[in-house]
Amino acid sequence: MSEVLKAPLVVEFPFTRSLGPVQSAFLTGLRERVVLGVRTSDGRTLVPPVEYDPVTADELHDLAEVAPTGTVTTWAWNHAPRRGQPLTTPFAWVLVRLDGADTALLHALDAPGPDAVRTGMRVRIRWAPERTGAVTDIACFEPYDGGTAPLTGRTDGHADPVTGIVAAARLDYTYSPGRAQSAYIAGLADRRTLGERCPSCRKVYVPPRGACPTCGVPTAEQVEVGPRGTVTTFCIVNIKAKNLDIEVPYVYAHIALDGAGLALHGRIGGIPYDQVRMGLRVEPVWTQDARYPDHYRPTGEPDAEYDTYKELL
Image 1 (cartoon, helix red, strand yellow):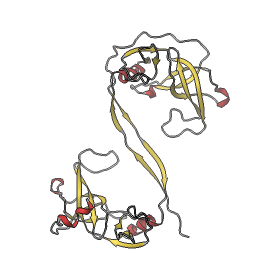
Image 2 (cartoon, helix red, strand yellow):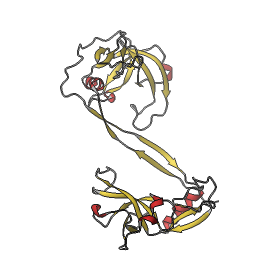
Image 3 (cartoon, helix red, strand yellow):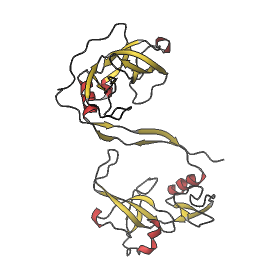
Image 4 (cartoon, one colour):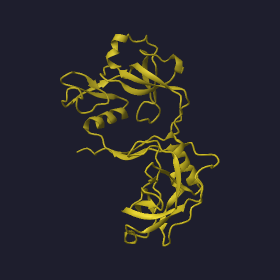
């Protein structure tokens, strides 16, 4: 039996989120070591604050300070912290109802072990030494034996309010291709593009999936396609990705390789971005020791007729 292929993959998409007045005040307050909640019409104080009452849907805007001390309402022990979590040593995830609040805040509790954590224990905020206006300005919670800490009396008027945050979304996983994609990857190593034909509808899928998504039947007949193809649709990219050394603007396109029944993705090079067009005939460009084409460039052939690729848009 051949070796099973597998590789670590990361999907990451940081994006900038704008804040409304309530969230802006909350994060600006954390930067100033002040915890703000928002008061509802029936007198409850919600921490973290929200823009609208989850019970009545009323718009909320009445800010109220709560104490940096509180009580653990529930917890779970994290014995193996992961990348990006608040602490690098084992800790407890806790829901803490801060003094003066009616809801609980989720954060980390720095404790020597699970035996040192219990529901009902008193804790207080440990502030990060450098604060930027994010929930990470609370470095973590720590055990506390005292009563309610005094308030600062500040609920607004902070200079330079936080108006937006960068939220990082990331997924780390190990990918293992099946029979069909393993053959496809092996073909790329020889600079060949392999697909599989459906025995029912006769479409050739590239990359192959091992089954036809239209007919629901297994595919086994291997078909080599390309290497040339036709641009079916495309977009002009104007935002530079931090992990790609490609100058903007550039063109990313759907390319229907000759003989394929499905278009694949590829970057278009060797031509000004504003001259790329539907029907443009292209061919792959490989760099030394590359595992897949670096980009596609024009072949110099006449553009393909629309009717030859309209079903692949």
